[in-house]
Image (cartoon, rainbow, N blue to C red; front, side, top):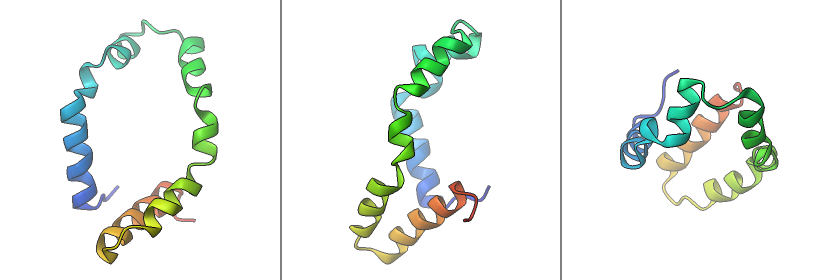
Length: 84
C-alpha cells in the first residue's frame, strides 16, 4: 500500500510517542496471553464506533482548510474502503 508521506510520518510519530509495540495489551496479545474470546470482547466494545466512523471523518475532512492535506486524508480513506 502506498501511503501519503505526511500521513505515514504522523502515524510513525504516534507509534513512537505511544510506544505501541510495548503497550501491555499488544505485548500480551502477541504472546498469546489474551484468549480469542477476550480479544473479541475488546473489539465488540467499540464496534459501533467503527460502523459510524465515516460520519465524523467526513466532518473532520470537511474542516481541513488545506486542499492538499484534505485530499491526502480522502485518498487514504478511499484506500481503506477498498477504493469504493
